[in-house]
Amino acid sequence: MKQPRRVIAITGAGGALGSALSRQLAGEADTDLVLSDISRSSLQETLDALRAPDATAPGARVEDLTADVSDAAQVQAVADRAVERFGRLDVMISNAGVLNPNGRIHNLSTDDWQRAFQVNVLGAVNAIRAAVGVMRPQKSGSVILTASVAGLTAWSHSAPYCATKAAVIHLTKVAGLEYARDGIRVNCVCPGTFLSSIHHGLPEDALDAIAAKHPLGLGDADDLVGAYSYLAGRASRWTTGSAIVVDGGYSAR
Ligand SMILES: NC(=O)c1ccc[n+]([C@@H]2O[C@H](COP(=O)([O-])OP(=O)(O)OC[C@H]3O[C@@H](n4cnc5c(N)ncnc54)[C@H](O)[C@@H]3O)[C@@H](O)[C@H]2O)c1
Image (cartoon, rainbow, N blue to C red; front, top):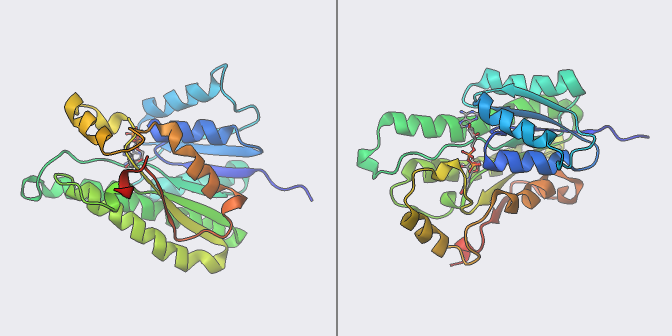
């Protein structure tokens, strides 16, 4: 029997990692994509990259929509689009995330905390909820959340980011347990630092200091895609509740 094409949804698809993931996965066999981002212009850049002459996405069909991951209805619309257009959803990649302004805890506002939790934690919860609504009847699926090494190690001046990424790692474990019997795997990736708009405005010496903590140097978004590709595919069929660290050796110290 012919296998159905694989359908992958990616949030935050307009960012550095979201774009790298979109380009990689669009080039994999029999794969269609539903790409979303809160920013229409960033999303358009990813769509343009997929349509560039050197893109390796020969057969991929791509749907796109703007969606704010902190709003459950908008993430539901991402899953709904996958079903309406392609009839299924096999992989949900929760990639959208925000890094707060730097500050010690007493200098951070309630708004700073709420924004970090709404995007980084509630965004991941909304992705799980929308995905399992489709995947449970299918009895199969893979949900991939995006944490960070900041969820494993403490960074001063970044409490909301560290706390929310730690929450994503623990959410991954609970969701992995809860949905295993439904045939749904839930894992997360913990990237080390790779250059993206998250670092805009950081002085050069601050970036040098971060780079020095990575034995293999600063990463590039393309350095992360292999882990997501593994978790999206059959090779990871016995992996759930896991946090996969891809960090250039950062956390080995
Ligand atoms: N860059 C790094 O060093 C690094 C390290 C570890 C983890 N991460 C994580 O990787 C993920 C991708 O980050 P990136 O570095 O590519 O950053 P990025 O800023 O390039 O991309 C993030 C994307 O998310 C989108 N976004 C922000 N808020 C959103 C919302 N509420 N709803 C929907 N989309 C929203 C942005 O528009 C942007 O396109 C994030 O979860 C980030 O925390 C990044």
